[in-house]
Amino acid sequence: MNQILGAASVSVGVIVAALAFGGGGALQYLGALFGVAAAVLLGVPGVHPLWGFAAFFVANVAWLVYGLLLRLRGLVVQHVLLLVLALVGLWNWWLGPLVLASQ
Image (cartoon, rainbow, N blue to C red; front, side, top):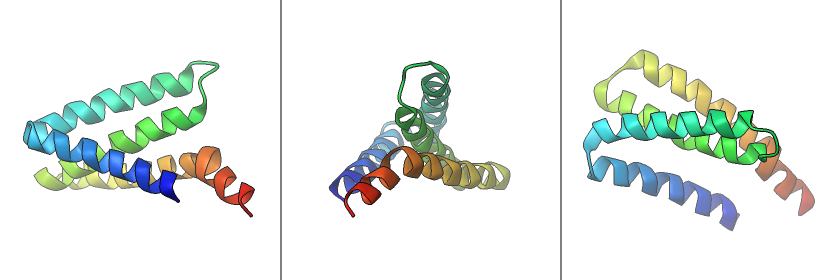
């Protein structure tokens, strides 16, 4: 449970920092950077998929907040759905095995 809270607080901290140091404009660069990093991490052999899905999670949250700030409904819908997929990936590669191993 502590790992879940730690990951969530890091994501929230990154988003808050982006908002504090540049508003919505910084969020789009944060989302783009983490989105590309996620694709690279998932595309490179030998890298654990967990890191790619974690990067996608941060990217999706950044784009979701950006879309909400600017009221871009299509972007919000897209990143809500992509966030769900990132959470599925995190469950399959990290949280699920953690929970099932503790039982």
